[in-house]
Structure formats: structure tokens, C-alpha cells
Image 1 (cartoon, rainbow, N blue to C red):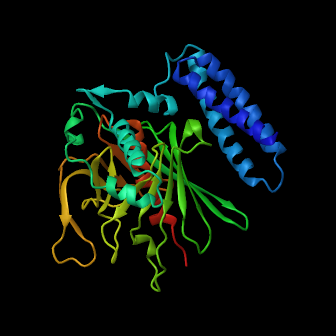
Image 2: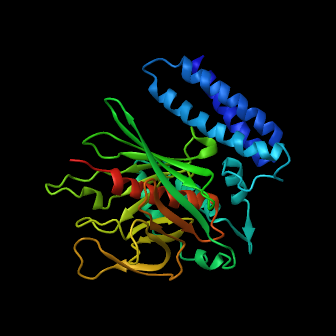
Image 3: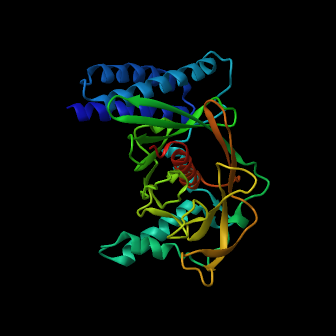
Length: 357
């Protein structure tokens, strides 16, 4: 019964943002109010030991209350509509349906490719074997970078960090992704850090769908160093999206591992994260034209030829709460942006809070 009730409240919360997406603002306002009441009851009825339910419910209450304040001027006729429509599953599906020059969205191509690979593999005993084959890319596909409209403005996200201590357990870190006006939260990446343990995983959720992550990232652990500074050691990340197979986001080297370069495959194209020499904190993402092992390297170092034009870039911010600004080239579909966002925020979380002594 309790599980059914939680599911009902989750559906109620999602329906509020669906109403916003469909510009049914009066309905959205009513549903947000109902969601605040339902979440409050859920938190009050949770047992003392069900702290996770209380934590999530209280976070959602604050967010729904914020949406009520944003919608009220629209209901009163002071504003014509929402300036920023929050990303949801509906907007993700819409971004997949865009076809340009007879070419589907990159994330739609990725879904086709991974489904084909999954079917061709038959009974899978080693998932890494399939993902490694995907990482070689498909050379006959057109370059993704050249398919993006250069006249479109970049999408800019402002990143803020906060934390919450859990008694006798650890600390939750929240990386809130705000829009260009820095007023509305679009995404939240959550990372839980136990004392003397590494961060094993992170979850990126659309703010409108807080209980249903759009990207779950598993982080490979690294051995402790006597001198510390383990947070600067690069490591492999496995991103689980709506795609039928995980995405391997992996550094080149097996020794002397650094965060950059780090490579992954999406939509049959190859991409590489590179450290921006002019700034710290946020890496540059470029599409790879070709790559090859460095002759004589014993650590797995790779060389590549990639596009000069960046798909993702940004800069670190050293404020009390604000920690970064991340830019995405205009025209990137929502699901691809979310994958890149999860990769960068997970890296930032580990750099800032991933290790203690």
C-alpha cells in the first residue's frame, strides 16, 4: 500500500510539469498545490528510519513551492507565459523527433545503433565487449559537428553546489543546474559521500522528475595514495541512460591516469574530453575524426585528430555556492546534453568532494 501511495504522489508531481509543458498554467498551479500537500503528508507519515523518503519529499516540496511562485504572475495576467520550460521526458521525446537534412537526432541514432548491437550480440555475458565494439564508431556516418547550425546560440547552464549532512552516515552533495537567467533549476545531480569512502555513483535528475534519474553514473574506484590527491586521478565512468546499453566514458591510459583525455561513443560518433589549457574545472568536448595509439607508448596513450570547434566548454567559478558555468553548442539534442552534463558534473563532484583522509 505504501509503495502504491508513493507511486501515486510521484505521478501527481509529474503531471504538474506536463501541464506546464502543455501551457495549461491554471491546471499546473492547482496540481502543484496538491503535490505540496501530498508530499507533506508523505514526509509526515514516514517512519523515523525512513530518512530517504523524508529527504526526497522535502526537496520536492521546496521545488513545487517555487513553481507556484513562478506560475502565479501568469495566472494573474502579469506575464504571457513561461520564459523557461523545464526539461521533461516529453521534451526529450520531442528533441528526438527533430529531423534535419534527412538526418535524425544524434541520440535517436544512438538508440538505433545500440539496439542493433544488442540484438546482434545475442545472449550477452560481457556487456563491456559490446560497448567496446561501439566505441570504434561507424566511419560511414556524417560528421556530427558539421550538422549543427552555427547560427544557433549556445545553451548555457550555471552550476551551484550545496550539501546536507546525514547523521552517522555521510553527506549528500547537490549540484543544481540553473538556466541562463540563474533563476530556475533545470537539473540536479546528487552524489553521496561517506567518510573515508569514495563516491561510487551519481544520479542526474530533471528537476521536474526528481525521483526518476535521467542518467545514473557508476564511478570506478581508484587505489589510495600515501600522499593523497586521489581526486586528480582520472577514472572510468559508466553512464546508464534510457539507451539499452551503458556508455563507457574512459581515460586512455592504464597508468599515470589523468582525467583528460577521456573518450566515449554516442550515435556512432567518437568524442573526446580534453582539458582546456586556458581554464580549470570544465573540460572541452570535441568530435574525433580519427584516433590511433601513440607509437611506443606502454600506458595506452592515444593520439587523435579532432574538430577545432568545441561542442561543450566552460569555466570554473570560485564563489560561495556557484562552482561552474557550462556551455553547449546550439542544436545538441536534450538527451546528448544530459549525458555530457552528467559526465562533467560527476567529475567536478569528485574533484571537489570525492576523497578525504
